[in-house]
Image 1 (tube, one colour):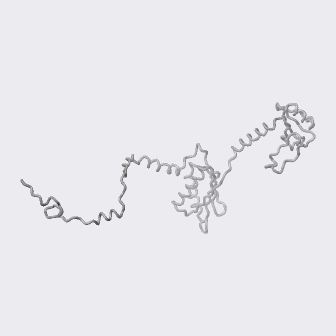
Image 2: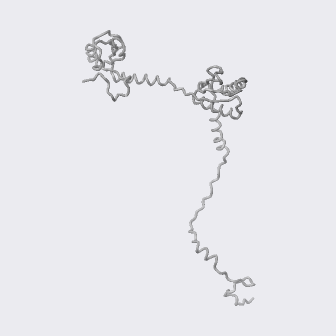
Image 3: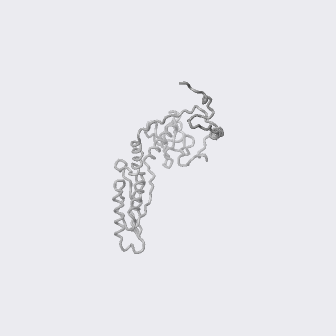
Length: 255
């Protein structure tokens, strides 16, 4: 016996589709197997028609009056629905926004670091929100803040474009930057700089000659034997250059 309500273990109530005996309406508008409308029929007649065609009666518009049902194989219906959902998700991009904060008196080196961070974010398909805040009497000369923001926008122009011109809101200047399409966007200079040292190192390294292999077939002497050999007394040499215990010293050679 089929139950008209989804089980508690179902992932989401929105994805639940009533099929055959789970449909609770008395009358339904039926769409045939070939996609043509068959009119409004009673639930019993619609189920009999589905059995005659060897398919299921699937409710596709439950909020309509009367509900719309289709004669289709339920497995095929679920496959087509999953395929449509997958295609729709491909065109949906989760937009992330990164914020970069500036000041009117920012150092040129610090500004370069901020620009590089913004370029990294834009190359990763993220939006960048630029905020410049004025403090105290800096509000008397807002033109210096606009100069910093305009320089920032000029340097990142190859990677992103501003959604709107810089605006002075309260005590700060705000602007939103969106990344350019990949085919129109410049390459990240930091990524190229990281690849160049590796290539130059490989090119500059000469072909190293193989080191000669030293074969050690003899067993080294123990330490105590080396010390004994070093401390052994040596035989005294004579003035003639021979040894004192030479057995041939007393032999006279007749010439």
